[in-house]
Length: 152
Image (cartoon, rainbow, N blue to C red):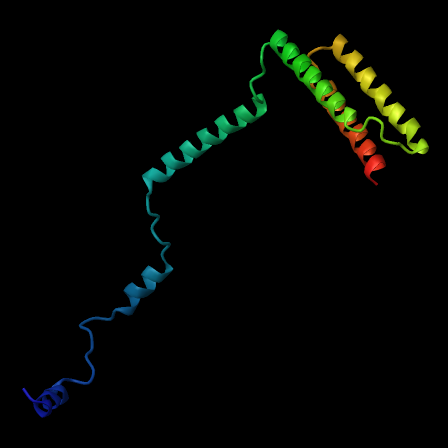
């Protein structure tokens, strides 16, 4: 079949073709009707699983980390405080003999007194993690102030 013959056949086809019936009422009805909801049975199962995971996560979060036995906790805090004190004293020995500015003496004495009071409080409340944290902060401040005075 050549190109001219194809063109001739195309010209033979009708230009417009009317449908056997009026299609517009059916189209309009489908446009106005609400779309059917697709059922997704797995979506409910997925939502339930997510809710369960959330509930378990919130329960673990509210429960907090598992705490050791009270006697064990007190022993751990005491050991940590002793190790911290040994490290602090070793760090202070590095600065022994270094000249310290006179105006810093009261601040250093106050930090030393605070550390002694915290250690005494730890002997009365051996499992107090809050006191241990306070002791760490006091030692850190004392060492930082000493280092600044010696170096700078």
